[in-house]
Image 1 (tube, rainbow, N blue to C red):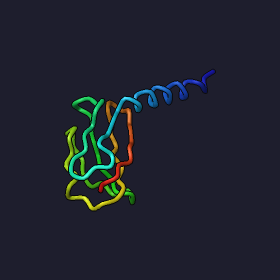
Image 2: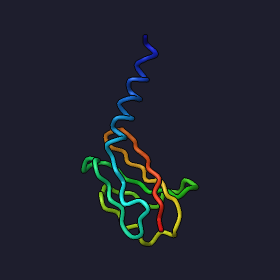
Image 3: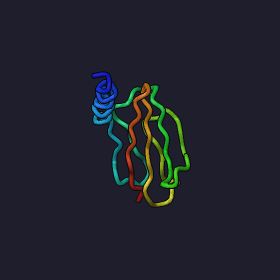
Image 4: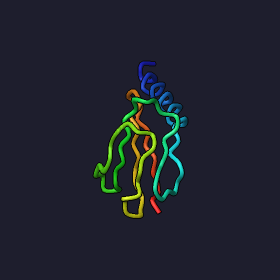
Length: 88
């Protein structure tokens, strides 16, 4: 029974993850974050794991990035959500 506690935490994280949207995807100039609190930390990484951008803005200008795939990581009160976006 003690081993089930981490599973319950995982379920909560998955439930929280489902409420955060990153759109549009694919995107050309700007991406938007919906469902995260105002204090959520947002980071953008390339596919090699290099952090390219960070902040708390919910509208992010990605126009300067090269076309390709990127990871958007949102840390909202310790619940971490990652989404892959495509930059056209």
